[in-house]
Image 1 (cartoon, one colour):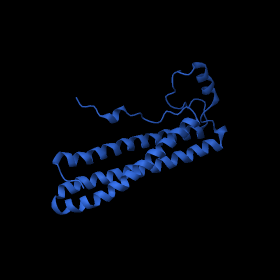
Image 2 (tube, one colour):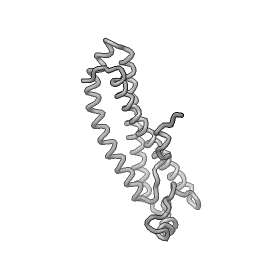
Image 3 (cartoon, one colour):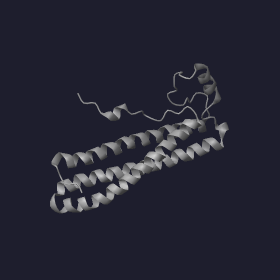
Image 4 (tube, one colour):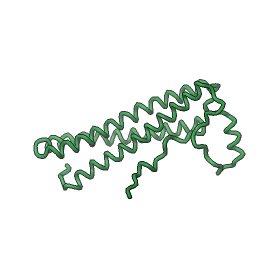
Length: 171
């Protein structure tokens, strides 16, 4: 039976308050910065490889090019969704009365103690229509980010596998 690692990733970020949202945004920004730098160097290396394989083995060229495009698309989707998350975080901070992270939940968590049960997502119970839309957008964008991070890793692994599998040269 085959199980994919992608089935183990969470559906969206677990957000308890504005600070957890900020932490997730900062972590994703750092990850994106590192991976964009890696991609920049990989792209430079792969230009020569793609030229070589376009002339000598077009099938390998197509596989390599497909994975490079997939990696680039994932990075762009993550960047786009991250900028949406930042805008939503700013909106939440500017309008605390919007009530996305209400104080009722925070008081309950204080009673649970340090190791109390974590909230699985933000409750939409007794929230305004605008707050519900913001919550849904946060969840949707975080799911897109996590999915594309997983797809990025898979594409990167497939790129490496192409070279290992056929023992092709890599600069």
